[in-house]
Image 1 (cartoon, rainbow, N blue to C red):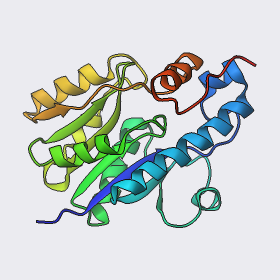
Image 2: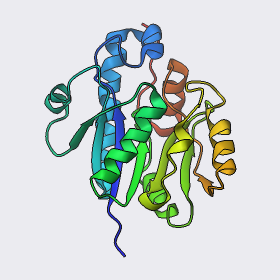
Image 3: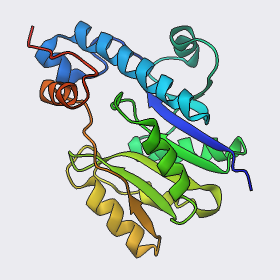
Length: 212
């Protein structure tokens, strides 16, 4: 049976001082926002290569029309809803399933180096697992995938977001809910200059960047 699969990419509008602020404090906010534009462009190109449909989950600080002007056509854009990251992630899944996708793969926009093979693996593993998670090296996660029939919205409740405990608490919640989970290869989000240079050394995607 053919599954309808959507990749949902959570995106912020690339305004200087509003995106990649930890990196911006090290290299300058304008430079960080320009890098972020590149992150999104690279990641979306990777997503296109999978053949899956792409939904852009737009941070509500800017209207969806601003994202359309920035990113152009070819994407289904939707506004993020919710009072915290967990609520926004849950809503992204719900909006994806409401569009009649059987399988949703959700990722952020901090991993321009995310391989297409990892996205495809996430989709494949939803056939055998309730929840597929890509763990981040900082203790969070960079990807989560579920099918509509196995959707577990409670996994996004009462999580201390932006802390090193996110993944461990999430896995505990899944175990308590008797959900079978699968972990993909751990990867590094790009939040700091150290992260950027480490990714550059590992992938060659970005040349080494120094402080301003």
